[in-house]
Image 1 (tube, rainbow, N blue to C red):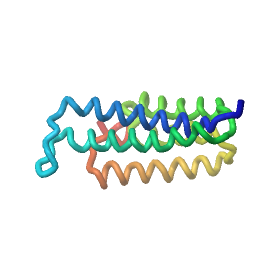
Image 2 (cartoon, rainbow, N blue to C red):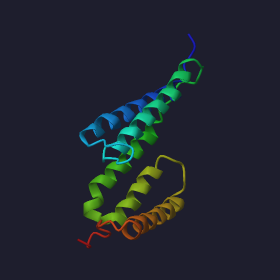
Image 3 (tube, one colour):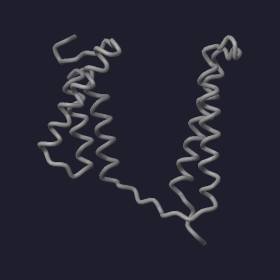
Length: 147
């Protein structure tokens, strides 16, 4: 038995699942019509399109060979740790420090040097501040003392 293209198969199934979830979840909002769209129109249509794209990715993957998936557990753990760091520490340390710590944690999944990690975390923290505070005008605590 030949190996199926499991990467595209899993990716297609994930797209289908996300699309179907979005379309079903959007049913709680008024759909409207094309001339007068309701709040549920866009997520429903986007979910259906995403599910169709998932089918277009998954079906050809059933008929072609592919390599097996090797899970990089080390990388997975560090990326999950960075997400948890951001979620837990945002309200305590503020956006700047939390963004920097999350970038440092996620960069542990790669082989970059510490100097590059620190430069990257500082740049990402500044970009995050500029986008969310200035660009979008969101009210997020920037520093631990800015409550």
